[in-house]
Every structure is written in structure tokens, then in C-alpha cells.
Length: 222
Image (cartoon, rainbow, N blue to C red):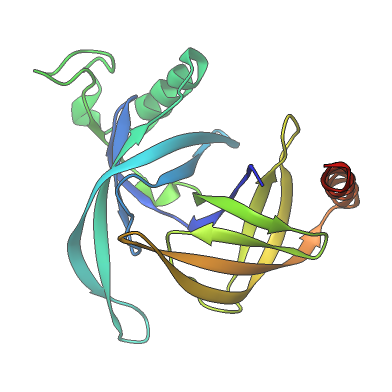
């Protein structure tokens, strides 16, 4: 359909170190190299959305959750993409406020050997906000949609999502995974997720209805 979306992949992802060009994160879910994600940083009561691509991902350690189950913890290198000068300045201000005291005298935009930007350890990584996965929308209706994801999700899992209509503001909603089927594309395992819409504002629902009506009329005329 040519429509993109994003859905909440993980909360409170820890940033271990960061530069204006990328970051090292820690998460309990494996990130596929080449996959796109959107990280929202909390900064002075505001949210900074940063689009990034996974460069590499390795198993870092294992931890026990409250129920005693051992879960894998992954470390992943992320590269920021499509970063404007204004966004780079916002990232720099975030780093200045969060980097450790021992790094305070080091300039953020200095060169370090063959690296363009120096990475800094973050003081409070647990305060990082939500981590979203970019996804492809294959079918769309007023009650739900079919999306393609690189990750397996459990049925009944609820999450926050956004649908990006062409030349329009994104539609924000909450959804429930109603179905999940694996689909092998060449050598890659992908997942078709059936999403049931749970909550959406009246304004967003009206915009979605107009878009769907437009697509249906266009299909009938072709």
C-alpha cells in the first residue's frame, strides 16, 4: 500500500554510550542488523524522536526476571539516519546534560582517531524513553490492519502505534496483536501481524476514513 507505520518495540531501552552520530544500546530483545527503529529520548519534559538503523547486535549477558526466568540481554550498535542540523543540536544538548562528569571537558564534535564523533557514557540510561520498530503496512481498514514485522509478537500483546499517511500527520492509536504468522522471504523470516485497533481519537479516525475512501475510489476507477 506504500504506507509506513511504527509500533512500540520496547520501553526503557538503556543507552550505554552515545554520540551525535549513533549509540550503543542494551535491550532484552534482539535487534536485526539493517532494521530501522525510532528512539524517543526524554529531554526537559519533551520527546526527541531519532530514526536509527541497527549496525550490529550481539548477546551481552543474561539476567533473571522477577519470576526467576533467565532472559538474554543484547547490546546493539545503532547509527542515526536522516538527522537534520537542528536534530543534531538537540542530540548534542541531551548528551551534554547526561554524560558523565569525567567527560564534561571533552567536546562533543571533536574527532577521535578515525571516528568522526566521540561516544560518551550516559549517566542515567534508565530514563531513556520508548523504542519503536518501523514496519510495513500491507492492509488497512477502520478496525485494524495487517503489518509486516521482523519480530515475533505474542497474540493479545498491546502496544502504542502510529500510521504514517502520505503527506499527512501520523495517526496515533493503541492496538492489540490479534494474529501472528511467520512468512519466509528468501532467507529472512518475517511475521505478518493482524492488529486490532483499540483506541483512536475521533479526529484521527475521520482522517483514516477519508484516506481509505480515497484508496477505494481510486481502485475502482483503475
